[in-house]
Length: 452
View (cartoon, rainbow, N blue to C red):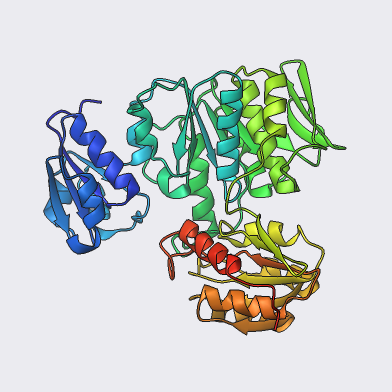
């Protein structure tokens, strides 16, 4: 792909936009960056690109830029239905996502992971397995480091492992992973997708450009995922915790078994640090990816056993007066919170709420009724959460996360659990889920042992 002297418009100036603009300028493109935020609100981002010859269109978009550019690169936060993108598409302009741009410059195998939950854990674990086997992976994508940076790494990678969101898949055209993984599909991002089917279709695009030389890993235990099997052009490699597979990877009686082309490898899970059925799915996907890529099974087994998981996912913050405080800020959708609530038999004080994503909270109802002693709601979604769940248990409102922590400290009895698992995004009150997590951790760390 020759970018020299091409007129390229980058839409959206966040982490991805910064990385794309830098890459494009370095490839000789004439770059314009546009963002709805005014200059004073993106001063930090602009400073990162200060030494690059970039044209800025801030505080709004110029329609002519959309209609006269040779290429438009869209950041994941910009919806496909943006009127200027629709006009540009109708005019025949080429519009791509950052992951599509990056994929055109990758010369090593790509392992891509998507799904509603478990993406980041699986992506990170796959990277650790490759490292344990002497490979040099680039690990990025939606996990935090833009995929485009894989093309600029000082030490070239021999494999790329990328978490891919539905947003990033919206504007692909030739993006083709050597191994593509779809972990699960539950309601999420229905504030952006009007229907669940549209969301599922966006996720399924990860398989769109694969061929018979590639692998598609599907979780057969997830009905919306399993139904894609007949549509694949890649070689299906299934995984399951409910059925034994002749070809694929499955979990039964505390052992993960990998079977491929007549060979078998077994991995006892009793000593694994990652617990829970959802993490077993993540582990199976990671093991399958590494073993299909030629990694050594013994080294993979040792690496999985020593992997303790990631921050902000069911992380024990501390214990106070016999109460365990867990931070699960990455629990940004209902399916994730279901898994978190299932981790405790009862006595839970659940702190939830944030920016509503449009899905149903009904899947939480039975668990809230049976296991949640107190429900403390914050953020924009608190009224909707209250209507769905408030009558099932003792329910309180809090204006801030710090107030919610104080209320939980007062209410939760010894032997109980305080779980911060929002079921919502963070953007109503915080920059991102990490800032939200750190605010919760700080509030909990400031608590003393006095329950009065």
